[in-house]
Image (cartoon, rainbow, N blue to C red; front, side):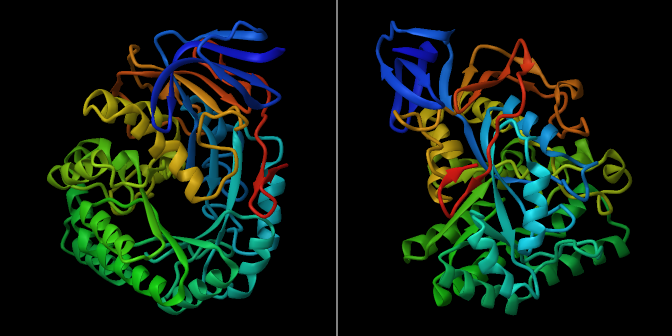
Length: 456
Protein backbone atom coordinates (compact mmCIF):
# COMPACT_ATOMS: atom_id res chain seq x y z
CA UNK A 1 0.00 0.00 0.00
CA UNK A 2 1.15 3.49 -0.77
CA UNK A 3 0.51 6.00 2.00
CA UNK A 4 0.22 9.76 1.83
CA UNK A 5 2.61 10.35 4.72
CA UNK A 6 4.75 8.14 6.97
CA UNK A 7 6.10 9.66 10.19
CA UNK A 8 9.07 7.61 11.32
CA UNK A 9 11.20 7.31 14.43
CA UNK A 10 9.32 9.70 16.72
CA UNK A 11 8.24 9.34 20.33
CA UNK A 12 4.51 8.96 19.80
CA UNK A 13 2.26 10.14 22.62
CA UNK A 14 -0.77 7.95 23.28
CA UNK A 15 -3.41 8.34 25.97
CA UNK A 16 -1.55 6.04 28.34
CA UNK A 17 2.09 6.75 27.54
CA UNK A 18 4.82 7.26 24.96
CA UNK A 19 6.09 4.66 22.47
CA UNK A 20 8.62 4.84 19.63
CA UNK A 21 6.56 3.76 16.61
CA UNK A 22 5.91 4.79 13.03
CA UNK A 23 2.59 6.23 11.83
CA UNK A 24 1.11 6.09 8.35
CA UNK A 25 -1.47 8.60 7.11
CA UNK A 26 -3.81 7.95 4.20
CA UNK A 27 -7.04 9.56 2.98
CA UNK A 28 -7.03 12.03 5.89
CA UNK A 29 -6.97 9.27 8.53
CA UNK A 30 -4.38 7.46 10.62
CA UNK A 31 -4.08 4.27 8.58
CA UNK A 32 -1.45 2.25 10.43
CA UNK A 33 0.68 2.33 13.58
CA UNK A 34 3.61 -0.09 13.81
CA UNK A 35 7.13 -0.41 15.20
CA UNK A 36 8.57 -0.23 11.69
CA UNK A 37 6.74 0.86 8.53
CA UNK A 38 8.59 0.27 5.28
CA UNK A 39 5.78 1.01 2.83
CA UNK A 40 5.95 3.70 0.18
CA UNK A 41 4.64 7.19 0.81
CA UNK A 42 4.37 10.53 -0.93
CA UNK A 43 6.23 12.04 2.02
CA UNK A 44 8.38 10.44 4.71
CA UNK A 45 8.94 12.55 7.81
CA UNK A 46 11.90 11.81 10.06
CA UNK A 47 10.62 12.56 13.59
CA UNK A 48 13.67 11.27 15.43
CA UNK A 49 14.20 13.16 18.68
CA UNK A 50 10.72 14.70 18.54
CA UNK A 51 7.38 14.03 20.16
CA UNK A 52 4.55 13.08 17.81
CA UNK A 53 1.30 14.18 19.39
CA UNK A 54 -2.36 14.67 18.53
CA UNK A 55 -3.03 18.28 17.68
CA UNK A 56 -4.56 20.47 20.33
CA UNK A 57 -8.35 20.75 20.44
CA UNK A 58 -8.89 24.33 21.59
CA UNK A 59 -12.48 24.75 22.77
CA UNK A 60 -12.24 28.48 23.56
CA UNK A 61 -11.24 30.76 20.68
CA UNK A 62 -12.59 34.20 19.75
CA UNK A 63 -12.43 35.01 16.03
CA UNK A 64 -13.96 38.44 15.49
CA UNK A 65 -15.20 37.96 11.92
CA UNK A 66 -17.68 39.29 10.88
CA UNK A 67 -18.20 42.66 12.52
CA UNK A 68 -14.80 43.16 14.14
CA UNK A 69 -12.61 41.53 11.53
CA UNK A 70 -9.93 44.15 12.15
CA UNK A 71 -9.39 42.40 15.53
CA UNK A 72 -8.94 38.91 14.08
CA UNK A 73 -10.11 37.00 11.03
CA UNK A 74 -10.51 33.30 10.31
CA UNK A 75 -7.48 33.18 8.03
CA UNK A 76 -5.01 34.83 10.41
CA UNK A 77 -6.48 33.25 13.52
CA UNK A 78 -6.40 29.73 12.10
CA UNK A 79 -2.87 30.24 10.79
CA UNK A 80 -1.77 31.14 14.31
CA UNK A 81 -3.53 28.07 15.67
CA UNK A 82 -1.85 25.85 13.07
CA UNK A 83 1.59 27.30 13.79
CA UNK A 84 0.99 26.71 17.47
CA UNK A 85 -0.01 23.05 17.12
CA UNK A 86 -3.81 23.31 17.25
CA UNK A 87 -5.68 21.27 14.66
CA UNK A 88 -9.29 21.87 15.71
CA UNK A 89 -11.02 24.68 17.59
CA UNK A 90 -14.47 25.72 18.79
CA UNK A 91 -15.25 29.37 18.08
CA UNK A 92 -17.07 31.49 20.65
CA UNK A 93 -20.33 33.36 19.90
CA UNK A 94 -18.62 36.70 20.63
CA UNK A 95 -16.87 39.08 19.71
CA UNK A 96 -18.47 39.04 16.28
CA UNK A 97 -21.26 41.39 15.30
CA UNK A 98 -23.87 40.10 15.11
CA UNK A 99 -23.14 37.82 18.04
CA UNK A 100 -24.10 34.21 17.43
CA UNK A 101 -27.36 34.21 19.36
CA UNK A 102 -29.84 33.06 16.71
CA UNK A 103 -29.91 31.02 13.51
CA UNK A 104 -29.60 34.06 11.25
CA UNK A 105 -26.41 35.22 12.95
CA UNK A 106 -25.08 31.64 12.91
CA UNK A 107 -25.66 31.43 9.16
CA UNK A 108 -23.79 34.73 8.67
CA UNK A 109 -20.83 33.37 10.64
CA UNK A 110 -20.79 30.06 8.75
CA UNK A 111 -20.70 31.94 5.45
CA UNK A 112 -17.93 34.26 6.67
CA UNK A 113 -15.74 31.33 7.74
CA UNK A 114 -15.98 29.39 4.47
CA UNK A 115 -12.67 28.50 2.80
CA UNK A 116 -10.61 30.56 5.25
CA UNK A 117 -9.61 28.10 7.97
CA UNK A 118 -6.34 26.19 8.02
CA UNK A 119 -7.60 23.90 10.79
CA UNK A 120 -10.96 22.25 11.45
CA UNK A 121 -13.48 24.30 13.39
CA UNK A 122 -16.81 24.11 15.18
CA UNK A 123 -19.12 26.78 16.56
CA UNK A 124 -20.87 27.82 19.76
CA UNK A 125 -24.30 29.31 20.17
CA UNK A 126 -24.88 32.05 22.72
CA UNK A 127 -27.33 32.37 25.59
CA UNK A 128 -28.36 35.99 26.21
CA UNK A 129 -31.45 37.72 27.60
CA UNK A 130 -34.37 37.30 25.22
CA UNK A 131 -33.16 34.40 23.05
CA UNK A 132 -34.55 31.35 24.84
CA UNK A 133 -36.69 30.57 21.79
CA UNK A 134 -33.61 30.63 19.52
CA UNK A 135 -31.65 27.91 21.32
CA UNK A 136 -33.29 24.96 19.59
CA UNK A 137 -32.67 26.35 16.10
CA UNK A 138 -28.97 26.77 16.85
CA UNK A 139 -28.78 23.28 18.34
CA UNK A 140 -30.39 21.89 15.20
CA UNK A 141 -27.73 23.66 13.11
CA UNK A 142 -24.99 21.68 14.86
CA UNK A 143 -23.36 23.99 17.40
CA UNK A 144 -21.28 21.95 19.84
CA UNK A 145 -22.18 23.91 22.99
CA UNK A 146 -23.63 27.18 24.23
CA UNK A 147 -21.88 30.05 26.02
CA UNK A 148 -23.05 32.71 28.44
CA UNK A 149 -21.53 35.39 30.66
CA UNK A 150 -22.42 35.59 34.34
CA UNK A 151 -20.01 38.56 34.43
CA UNK A 152 -20.79 41.91 32.85
CA UNK A 153 -20.01 42.05 29.14
CA UNK A 154 -21.10 43.79 25.97
CA UNK A 155 -20.61 47.19 24.36
CA UNK A 156 -24.19 48.30 23.88
CA UNK A 157 -23.70 48.15 20.11
CA UNK A 158 -26.78 46.58 18.46
CA UNK A 159 -26.19 42.89 17.86
CA UNK A 160 -23.35 42.61 20.39
CA UNK A 161 -23.27 39.97 23.14
CA UNK A 162 -24.86 40.57 26.54
CA UNK A 163 -24.44 38.91 29.92
CA UNK A 164 -27.26 36.87 31.44
CA UNK A 165 -29.31 37.72 34.49
CA UNK A 166 -30.10 34.90 36.92
CA UNK A 167 -33.53 34.33 35.36
CA UNK A 168 -32.05 33.87 31.89
CA UNK A 169 -29.33 31.62 33.27
CA UNK A 170 -31.82 29.40 35.10
CA UNK A 171 -34.41 29.24 32.29
CA UNK A 172 -31.68 28.78 29.71
CA UNK A 173 -30.25 25.84 31.63
CA UNK A 174 -33.71 24.29 31.81
CA UNK A 175 -34.14 24.61 28.06
CA UNK A 176 -30.65 23.37 27.21
CA UNK A 177 -31.14 20.35 29.47
CA UNK A 178 -34.27 19.49 27.48
CA UNK A 179 -32.25 19.81 24.28
CA UNK A 180 -29.35 17.70 25.62
CA UNK A 181 -26.95 20.63 25.21
CA UNK A 182 -24.02 21.80 27.36
CA UNK A 183 -23.72 25.36 28.65
CA UNK A 184 -20.28 26.95 29.08
CA UNK A 185 -20.20 29.82 31.54
CA UNK A 186 -17.91 32.75 32.30
CA UNK A 187 -18.34 32.71 36.07
CA UNK A 188 -17.72 35.90 38.01
CA UNK A 189 -20.15 37.78 40.28
CA UNK A 190 -21.04 40.78 38.12
CA UNK A 191 -22.44 43.10 40.77
CA UNK A 192 -19.46 42.72 43.10
CA UNK A 193 -16.75 43.01 40.43
CA UNK A 194 -18.45 46.01 38.80
CA UNK A 195 -18.80 47.90 42.07
CA UNK A 196 -15.30 47.02 43.28
CA UNK A 197 -13.91 48.26 39.98
CA UNK A 198 -15.82 51.52 40.25
CA UNK A 199 -14.54 51.94 43.80
CA UNK A 200 -10.91 51.43 42.77
CA UNK A 201 -11.15 53.96 39.95
CA UNK A 202 -12.90 56.49 42.17
CA UNK A 203 -10.07 56.19 44.69
CA UNK A 204 -7.42 56.57 41.99
CA UNK A 205 -6.21 52.98 42.45
CA UNK A 206 -5.72 51.95 38.83
CA UNK A 207 -2.62 49.73 38.72
CA UNK A 208 -2.62 46.17 37.42
CA UNK A 209 -2.67 44.85 40.99
CA UNK A 210 -5.65 47.09 41.76
CA UNK A 211 -7.48 45.55 38.80
CA UNK A 212 -6.71 42.06 40.08
CA UNK A 213 -7.96 43.00 43.55
CA UNK A 214 -11.21 44.33 42.06
CA UNK A 215 -12.03 40.81 40.85
CA UNK A 216 -11.10 38.64 43.86
CA UNK A 217 -11.17 34.85 43.86
CA UNK A 218 -14.35 34.81 45.94
CA UNK A 219 -16.28 36.38 43.04
CA UNK A 220 -15.27 33.47 40.81
CA UNK A 221 -16.10 30.84 43.41
CA UNK A 222 -19.50 32.36 44.25
CA UNK A 223 -20.55 32.39 40.60
CA UNK A 224 -19.40 28.79 40.14
CA UNK A 225 -21.44 27.76 43.20
CA UNK A 226 -24.53 29.43 41.72
CA UNK A 227 -24.04 27.53 38.45
CA UNK A 228 -23.67 24.27 40.38
CA UNK A 229 -26.91 24.93 42.26
CA UNK A 230 -28.78 25.66 39.04
CA UNK A 231 -27.25 22.58 37.37
CA UNK A 232 -28.40 20.34 40.20
CA UNK A 233 -31.94 21.66 39.82
CA UNK A 234 -32.16 21.72 36.01
CA UNK A 235 -29.98 18.74 35.09
CA UNK A 236 -28.09 20.87 32.56
CA UNK A 237 -24.56 19.78 31.66
CA UNK A 238 -22.21 22.66 32.41
CA UNK A 239 -18.62 23.63 31.76
CA UNK A 240 -16.87 26.51 33.53
CA UNK A 241 -14.53 28.42 31.24
CA UNK A 242 -11.10 29.83 32.17
CA UNK A 243 -11.00 28.92 35.87
CA UNK A 244 -8.23 31.00 37.42
CA UNK A 245 -7.98 29.71 40.99
CA UNK A 246 -7.39 26.52 42.94
CA UNK A 247 -10.42 27.45 45.05
CA UNK A 248 -12.54 27.38 41.90
CA UNK A 249 -11.06 24.01 40.97
CA UNK A 250 -11.86 22.51 44.38
CA UNK A 251 -15.42 23.83 44.25
CA UNK A 252 -15.97 22.08 40.92
CA UNK A 253 -14.31 18.84 42.05
CA UNK A 254 -16.62 18.71 45.06
CA UNK A 255 -19.63 19.11 42.78
CA UNK A 256 -18.31 16.34 40.49
CA UNK A 257 -18.05 14.03 43.51
CA UNK A 258 -21.70 14.78 44.24
CA UNK A 259 -22.73 13.69 40.74
CA UNK A 260 -23.07 17.08 39.05
CA UNK A 261 -22.28 16.89 35.32
CA UNK A 262 -19.74 19.71 35.41
CA UNK A 263 -16.26 20.14 33.94
CA UNK A 264 -13.93 23.09 33.51
CA UNK A 265 -10.94 24.48 31.72
CA UNK A 266 -8.05 26.76 32.58
CA UNK A 267 -5.71 28.67 30.29
CA UNK A 268 -1.93 28.97 29.79
CA UNK A 269 -1.86 32.60 30.91
CA UNK A 270 -3.01 31.67 34.41
CA UNK A 271 0.03 29.41 34.71
CA UNK A 272 2.54 31.49 32.75
CA UNK A 273 1.96 35.02 34.06
CA UNK A 274 1.42 36.11 37.66
CA UNK A 275 -0.34 39.27 38.75
CA UNK A 276 3.04 40.66 39.74
CA UNK A 277 4.31 40.07 36.18
CA UNK A 278 1.08 41.62 34.82
CA UNK A 279 2.18 44.80 36.59
CA UNK A 280 5.37 44.75 34.49
CA UNK A 281 3.81 43.70 31.15
CA UNK A 282 0.86 46.07 31.30
CA UNK A 283 -2.54 45.92 29.52
CA UNK A 284 -1.45 43.26 27.00
CA UNK A 285 -1.83 40.81 29.91
CA UNK A 286 -5.26 42.02 31.03
CA UNK A 287 -7.99 39.38 31.10
CA UNK A 288 -10.95 38.33 33.20
CA UNK A 289 -10.98 36.52 35.50
CA UNK A 290 -7.68 38.28 36.14
CA UNK A 291 -4.23 36.81 36.48
CA UNK A 292 -3.63 35.79 40.09
CA UNK A 293 -0.84 36.59 42.52
CA UNK A 294 2.11 34.20 42.57
CA UNK A 295 1.03 32.50 45.80
CA UNK A 296 -2.37 31.71 44.29
CA UNK A 297 -0.87 30.74 40.94
CA UNK A 298 1.29 28.13 42.64
CA UNK A 299 -1.81 26.46 44.10
CA UNK A 300 -3.36 26.31 40.61
CA UNK A 301 -0.14 24.78 39.30
CA UNK A 302 -0.33 22.07 41.94
CA UNK A 303 -3.91 21.27 40.96
CA UNK A 304 -2.86 20.90 37.30
CA UNK A 305 0.14 18.71 38.12
CA UNK A 306 -2.10 16.56 40.33
CA UNK A 307 -4.41 15.91 37.36
CA UNK A 308 -7.30 17.92 38.78
CA UNK A 309 -7.65 20.35 35.84
CA UNK A 310 -9.89 18.91 33.13
CA UNK A 311 -8.34 20.62 30.14
CA UNK A 312 -6.59 23.69 28.76
CA UNK A 313 -7.81 26.27 26.26
CA UNK A 314 -6.32 29.47 24.89
CA UNK A 315 -9.23 31.87 25.43
CA UNK A 316 -7.62 33.67 22.49
CA UNK A 317 -9.27 37.09 22.71
CA UNK A 318 -7.50 39.52 20.34
CA UNK A 319 -8.06 43.18 19.62
CA UNK A 320 -6.40 46.10 17.85
CA UNK A 321 -3.37 47.72 19.55
CA UNK A 322 -5.21 50.94 20.39
CA UNK A 323 -7.59 49.02 22.66
CA UNK A 324 -4.62 47.99 24.83
CA UNK A 325 -3.42 51.56 25.29
CA UNK A 326 -4.09 53.78 28.29
CA UNK A 327 -4.94 52.60 31.78
CA UNK A 328 -5.47 49.00 32.82
CA UNK A 329 -9.11 49.48 33.82
CA UNK A 330 -9.96 51.01 30.43
CA UNK A 331 -8.04 48.52 28.26
CA UNK A 332 -9.64 45.60 26.40
CA UNK A 333 -9.68 42.52 28.63
CA UNK A 334 -8.33 39.69 26.51
CA UNK A 335 -5.03 37.95 25.77
CA UNK A 336 -3.88 36.88 22.31
CA UNK A 337 -2.58 33.40 23.03
CA UNK A 338 -3.66 30.87 20.41
CA UNK A 339 -0.19 30.48 18.89
CA UNK A 340 1.55 29.56 22.14
CA UNK A 341 -0.71 27.10 23.91
CA UNK A 342 1.29 23.97 23.25
CA UNK A 343 4.92 25.04 23.27
CA UNK A 344 4.64 27.38 26.25
CA UNK A 345 2.75 24.89 28.42
CA UNK A 346 4.91 21.95 27.35
CA UNK A 347 7.94 23.94 28.47
CA UNK A 348 6.37 24.99 31.79
CA UNK A 349 4.60 21.74 32.65
CA UNK A 350 6.63 18.91 31.10
CA UNK A 351 10.16 20.29 30.93
CA UNK A 352 10.23 22.48 34.02
CA UNK A 353 7.79 20.66 36.31
CA UNK A 354 8.13 17.08 35.00
CA UNK A 355 4.48 16.40 34.19
CA UNK A 356 4.20 13.10 32.25
CA UNK A 357 3.94 13.89 28.55
CA UNK A 358 0.78 11.83 28.06
CA UNK A 359 -0.94 13.65 30.94
CA UNK A 360 -0.15 16.97 29.30
CA UNK A 361 -1.35 15.79 25.89
CA UNK A 362 -4.59 14.45 27.33
CA UNK A 363 -5.27 17.89 28.81
CA UNK A 364 -4.91 19.65 25.45
CA UNK A 365 -6.35 17.04 23.08
CA UNK A 366 -8.15 13.93 24.30
CA UNK A 367 -10.15 15.37 27.21
CA UNK A 368 -11.56 18.44 25.39
CA UNK A 369 -12.51 16.32 22.36
CA UNK A 370 -14.26 13.84 24.64
CA UNK A 371 -16.13 16.43 26.72
CA UNK A 372 -17.33 18.37 23.68
CA UNK A 373 -18.08 15.15 21.82
CA UNK A 374 -16.00 16.19 18.81
CA UNK A 375 -15.67 13.09 16.60
CA UNK A 376 -12.37 11.58 15.48
CA UNK A 377 -10.24 14.20 17.23
CA UNK A 378 -7.83 14.36 20.14
CA UNK A 379 -6.10 10.98 19.96
CA UNK A 380 -3.54 9.08 17.94
CA UNK A 381 -5.31 5.85 16.99
CA UNK A 382 -6.06 3.98 13.79
CA UNK A 383 -9.09 5.45 11.91
CA UNK A 384 -8.94 8.75 13.79
CA UNK A 385 -8.41 11.96 11.83
CA UNK A 386 -4.73 12.45 10.99
CA UNK A 387 -4.46 15.56 13.16
CA UNK A 388 -0.84 15.34 14.24
CA UNK A 389 1.83 17.73 15.43
CA UNK A 390 5.57 17.33 15.92
CA UNK A 391 7.28 19.02 18.86
CA UNK A 392 11.04 19.25 19.28
CA UNK A 393 11.89 19.43 23.02
CA UNK A 394 15.49 20.38 22.27
CA UNK A 395 14.92 23.60 20.36
CA UNK A 396 14.58 27.01 22.01
CA UNK A 397 13.52 30.43 20.76
CA UNK A 398 12.58 33.87 22.00
CA UNK A 399 9.09 34.87 20.83
CA UNK A 400 9.08 38.02 18.72
CA UNK A 401 6.10 39.97 17.41
CA UNK A 402 7.15 39.15 13.84
CA UNK A 403 6.78 35.43 14.63
CA UNK A 404 3.05 35.88 15.22
CA UNK A 405 0.40 35.13 12.60
CA UNK A 406 -2.29 37.17 14.35
CA UNK A 407 -3.84 40.05 12.44
CA UNK A 408 -2.51 42.29 15.21
CA UNK A 409 0.98 41.09 15.98
CA UNK A 410 1.37 41.49 19.72
CA UNK A 411 1.19 39.15 22.68
CA UNK A 412 1.68 39.13 26.43
CA UNK A 413 4.32 36.45 25.76
CA UNK A 414 6.51 38.52 23.42
CA UNK A 415 10.14 38.46 24.56
CA UNK A 416 9.71 35.20 26.41
CA UNK A 417 12.17 32.31 25.88
CA UNK A 418 10.38 29.03 25.15
CA UNK A 419 12.42 25.84 25.36
CA UNK A 420 10.67 23.71 22.72
CA UNK A 421 9.18 24.22 19.26
CA UNK A 422 6.34 23.00 17.10
CA UNK A 423 8.00 21.86 13.88
CA UNK A 424 5.08 20.45 11.84
CA UNK A 425 1.29 20.45 11.95
CA UNK A 426 -0.92 18.08 9.95
CA UNK A 427 -4.70 18.54 9.71
CA UNK A 428 -6.39 15.39 8.45
CA UNK A 429 -3.05 14.43 6.92
CA UNK A 430 -2.55 17.76 5.13
CA UNK A 431 0.61 19.59 6.17
CA UNK A 432 -0.48 23.11 7.11
CA UNK A 433 2.60 24.31 8.99
CA UNK A 434 6.31 23.59 8.80
CA UNK A 435 8.93 25.36 10.87
CA UNK A 436 11.07 25.96 7.76
CA UNK A 437 8.26 26.80 5.34
CA UNK A 438 5.75 28.57 7.58
CA UNK A 439 2.09 28.16 6.65
CA UNK A 440 1.76 25.61 3.85
CA UNK A 441 -0.76 25.61 1.02
CA UNK A 442 -4.35 26.77 1.01
CA UNK A 443 -6.92 26.48 3.83
CA UNK A 444 -8.07 22.88 4.39
CA UNK A 445 -10.15 23.34 7.55
CA UNK A 446 -13.70 22.00 7.59
CA UNK A 447 -16.72 23.03 9.60
CA UNK A 448 -17.81 20.34 12.05
CA UNK A 449 -21.48 20.05 12.94
CA UNK A 450 -22.60 18.30 16.11
CA UNK A 451 -25.91 17.01 14.83
CA UNK A 452 -24.49 14.66 12.20
CA UNK A 453 -20.90 14.40 13.50
CA UNK A 454 -19.46 14.93 10.04
CA UNK A 455 -17.30 17.62 8.52
CA UNK A 456 -18.47 19.81 5.67
